[in-house]
Figure (tube, rainbow, N blue to C red):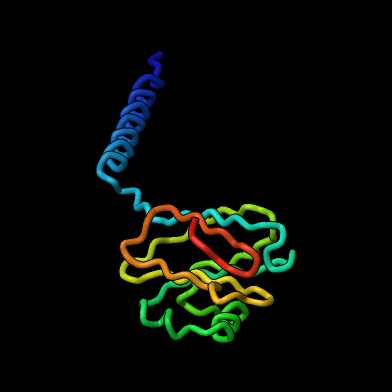
Length: 148
C-alpha cells in the first residue's frame, strides 16, 4: 500500500511558499496604496464657546474662496444634505477636551478650518495653505481658533 499523502503535502507547501513570495513582493514594491493624511490635534479650554460644544469643520478649497467664506455659508454646510464634496471632516468639539483627527491630504488644494462658535470672534476660521504639513495643533480659546 502506497501512501499518497506526501505528494499532496508537497504541493500545498509549494503553494504556500508561492503565496508568501507574492505577498513579500507586493509589500516590497508598494502595492499597498497608502493615502497621504494630515493629523490634527485640537485642544480647547473649558471656557471655549462659553462651555458649550462647538462644530469644527475642515474643507478643501482654493485660497481665494477662503476670503469670501462667511459664517452663515459655512454653518449651512454642516447640516447640508447631500453633504458638500469639499468637506473632509465635521467634528463635535466638547470644551476642555482634546480631540485627535486624521483627514486625507488633498492633492492640489488648501484646507479651511472653521469653528462655529455661538458668538464667534473675528478669528473663527484658519487657512492652511500648500504645501500642507503632516501635523497641526489647533487651539480653541474663548471664541477664537488659533495655531499652536
